[in-house]
Length: 242
Image (cartoon, rainbow, N blue to C red; front, side, top):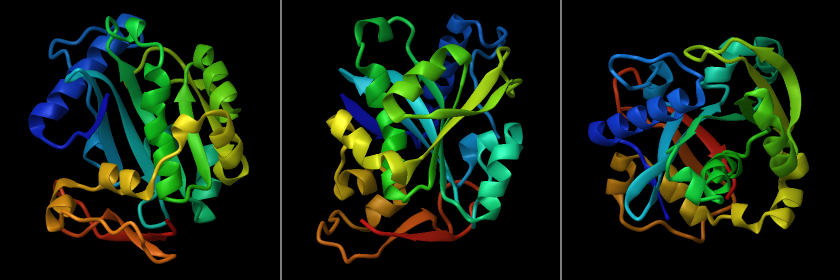
């Protein structure tokens, strides 16, 4: 199994088509002529798109969006403002994993796929020292997030952009449950090296082939460095501890 940060146009297109197949299979979108599903948050500086590969084949994908005081906009904000806007106003760090999809055929043969995919959101919570972790999900998926991540439902189901079925918001105060989840699911543990390598943009990785493991207590982790990626990306740096 491999995690891959999706950056090239070809990889992005493959993910957009996987999203379409997965959502169409679940009946959560209408058929589209272009057979792909993308939105404006895919180009956001505070979003990372990941692919999970088994035997070199894209099998699942998730997008991790991170709300910080410098870059507060994430997909869930527009849909669940009554819960998120006060937290954003307080300067809270919020991790919003979204667009979690799996290949309809391969997923049935990989029962561990859901855990390995949502793990990427948990790595983001650790890397950015999140105050809150979110999951905007359909009602039938709430039990998974309650059992694994101890989420509570904080907003009832409602319409969600591009989807035909209502979505509710579940959330958890990450510092309160961090150690409990590590104890119950050791697979969610990670090293600083893994987290930084996964979330480093291509141009950041090119700066140096070596990442120092013995970092000082406060390490600078770049969320959206000036000049990074696509147009409209601005500089925003958040200090986090390893």
